[in-house]
Image 1 (cartoon, one colour):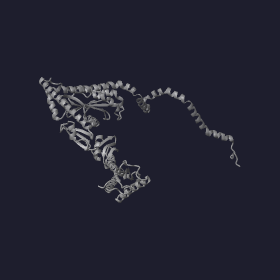
Image 2: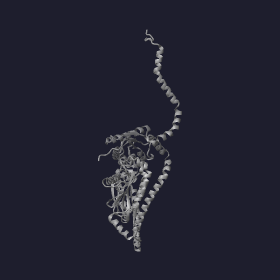
Image 3: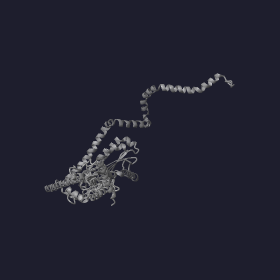
Image 4: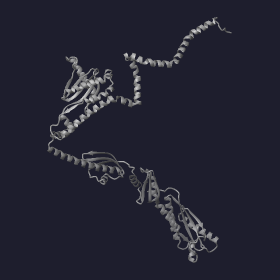
Length: 583
């Protein structure tokens, strides 16, 4: 037995020790319970003091940096949900800028078109047209080169501190767009070199430089630099435009310029301001055209009009010819082109389709107008499939073929061998899955049936009361034997067999029972005679009917002699496919 309190301690001391150990845990649980119950009250209290806290922390940007991810996510989510709200918010700012940029571009385009049109009716314009033909340049480009006084071809917006490119705009097609960052860096390096290497007072940086036919004007601001690449002699007023644009950029983009860290997205809105600086000035036309020049131009216009009409008619003929070729079975046009005045046409052509010369003649295309290059392929156009089937199956002239989907229907008359081969070969013809030969008459089987019917009309006569052939019947028996052998061989070749029944008959004289036995004996005698002549493989059955089936009335001796006979019954049977003969 163990004691409950082996140490002999006082129980109250254990309670006190337990209270000391559990008291902190109990206080923490109670504090958590109070916080949970007061959660709603605390949220309301935080909401009351949050505005004051934000104002108090507005002295530095710690709170702004903390709230930036949350505000960014909220703005992005709201843009996705309600984009129209943000469109309405930025419309007053972007609308005027976009309109100004479009108006400036439109003015430049109209001015260039006016210059081209005005000089096209002058003496100089004609010489410039010859120059355009000689140099391969466009007439508008030649006019601009001769009449241009000055033009701002490129405008660069550069960050002052880093020298990085913030924006670049240019007129027409530019080959320096991919190198704009390098150019902006070089401009910054050159201006810094001038400032560091020469005795330049503060506030008097490099303002212009000359590069061949081009000059570069530079305007510097606290945070950004504008550089304009000019061709010709620009007026001094243009520098004022650069200064005004640079001031507008500093005003509208002060925050992105001050916090610039390589992200150019905020400066996309500055493009309309840069577009306004892409200005140009050309000299006005010298004089109005003379009447003779107008007449010459009218004649030229008439010639151009006539040529345009002829070209339109030629194009219409080409389109009609192309449509005719594309509609032709077995032709697929893959490409068209031109080699001088001659049209080029590449196509796929089925070997059974109409040849190119005949097709162009059918389309009424003059020889030499179109050069055709073809490659072979197998067409599935129904007329081509039918022609291919007739060639592959070697269809006889008296067999007609028609196509229903992928089923080939044949009608007419053909040999048994052709019907069998067509059934085997048809599915190998592209575009055909099966062939229907039910409407094709088998000429060989038809001839076989005729042979069998002809044997059915043969008969051998006998002497009265005997199983001996009447005089002159031996040659007929031999002829019947040859016919049965030919019938047997033809039937085997065509996959047919037959039942041959030898039927004996008597006249009506005498006892009927004796006549029945006599008729059977006559049939067996003929059967045995045929077998002796080599027809052992031919199936022969003998049967007697007595006088029950007279052929003619027996009013005369001749009639009774006619009824003393043996007849033959032939029934054809299809047993197997054809037995092919050795070639």
